[in-house]
Each structure stands twice: as C-alpha cells, then as structure tokens.
Length: 356
Image 1 (cartoon, rainbow, N blue to C red):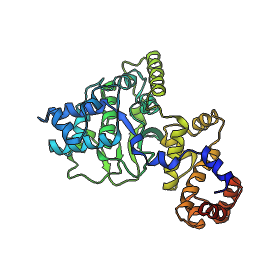
Image 2 (tube, one colour):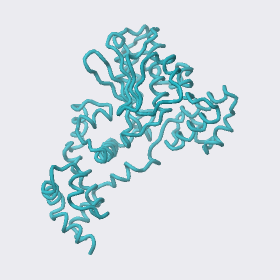
Image 3 (tube, rainbow, N blue to C red):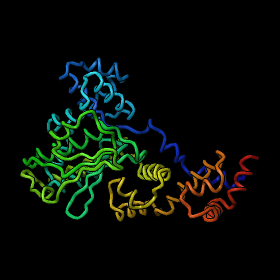
Image 4 (cartoon, rainbow, N blue to C red):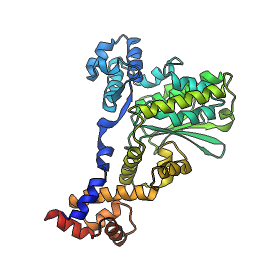
C-alpha cells in the first residue's frame, strides 16, 4: 500500500471495532443485585440464578462495579425462565424501593419538577451504563422520554424497555405523590403473550413494533412541583454524578463515544447532527460546542468515520458505487472527490495499491 495512505490509517481509530465490540459495553452492578433479590422472592436462590446465567458472584458483589452487557442479557433471560414470569422486568421495577439507585434516585427527588428530574436524569444516565442513552424532547404539549441504543438502533431487549421506563415512572410517582400516567408508549419489541400487566402498571396504551422506544407524558404532569425539591442539593448531586462519570469506566472517552455512535448510524443510514445529539441525550448546540472544545467539527468527525468505513469496505471487495451509496454520498463522483481529498489518490488507486 502507498505510504501516504498508511500514515493516515495509523491516525484513525478502528471505528467499526468500537461499534461491534460488545465486550466494551457495560452496565452498573447494582442492577444484577436487584435482579437476584427479586428472584429470591420467587424462591430462586442467587446461586441458582448466577449458575444458570453463567455469571460469577464476584462480578456483582460491588455496587460500584460494572459487568459486561452480554452478562446482563443472560441474567434477564435466566430470571424470566427460572421464575416463569414473562413480565419479570416490569414487576421487578414496579417493586423497586426508592434509593436503590442512590444518587440518581435522590437527584430526581431534589429536582423541582418531573421535567427537571427527567432532564437531569438523561444527562446523568451514563453513570449507569455506557450502552444505552436516555433523552427528553418536546413536541407541542407533550414530553417524549426516549430510550436509545446508539450501537444498534434497531435492537433493544424487552426487559430493558420495561425495566427502565417503569423505573422512571414509578420514581416520578413516588417523588410527586401523584399517580402519574403516560398518554401512551411506543416500544420496538414484539407484543408479549399478555398486555394486561402493562395496562395495570403503566395505565397507558402501548404500541408495539415501533421504530422508537418512547414514553409520552403531558406537559401538565411534567410541571408538578416536587414536595422535597432542593435546587442547591440538586446541583451538588448532579455535579457529583458527572464527576463519577468522568472517573468511571462508564465515562467513555467523549470522542470515542461520538465516533462509535456515528459509525453505527452510518450503517443505519442516519448521520445527521440532530440524530446524533438526540442519541447522546444532548441538544445539537451543546453537542457542537463539546466537539469544538476538542478542536474538531461535526463534519470533520463524520469525514473520519466515512474514511475508516471506506477503507474497510474497499478492502472487502465492495465496488466504488456500493461504497458511495453506503456512506450516503450523492453519487460515486462525490465519493471519489472526497476520497481523493482524504488520501491524495482515487478509490481505484487505493484498491490497486492495497492488492499489490
């Protein structure tokens, strides 16, 4: 291969590896402990659960620790199978005592309103995992609490959808002392055997097989004043959570996170700044500022993702037209122009040099 291209590649991270490396995705060890405790109410011992799921006791012994995402998948699946409860995640979240998630629970209680609580929670959601993203958006008089999987936008296990949305709804009910009910919910999962428990616990119509996981709440409920609101304490708690995120494995390097999500979005065909910001739980403007603080622009980061993906696809036998389409260029000519700007040579020259 030509030396010029080799030098470029050395400077570019393996973005597709970030996107596809499930082992780098981790969640808090608090949740496995909660799952184990819930199983015990069904007569299933912690030892039996962990053995069935192939998870070691050491991996969940520290509340401040983390475990790989695939181990969490195994725990949820084992819990549902051993208890025989198809709605295990929903029931576990429904019974979860306030304070189980410590800082995030108290942050919600100290917030001034449900809107304030959910905004702060979405910003601090990364303290619980480096896999999923929570965001709060508005449309007219409705608030949209959305749950995303940036690495694979089309995949979200039903257990996570039920557990996370029910968890937030229950905590809002606890801190407001009001039996809040969503207007409706959208979920990407298939319809379960029975939806009766959704009706009982959530009190809202649930639409299945949707393109987004979303809980819709009316503005009137989002503006209820919290009886224990404490603005000063709230700021202290949020600052503390943010510091923990920086020091934790969940505080994934910001640029690495952006590259990973962009790489996944490239495959899904959506590489807009607006989409990226929503998945990261930020506004477009704040995301741009954060990227600029590293001396980069969104366009430069998108170019690097496209460049890395182009190298990968060309090396694996894709035609120039196919690569141009997958990278969302208007046509092959636009792709060739960009490739020459990146490397100083055409895609065809790159293929020939790579094969030499």
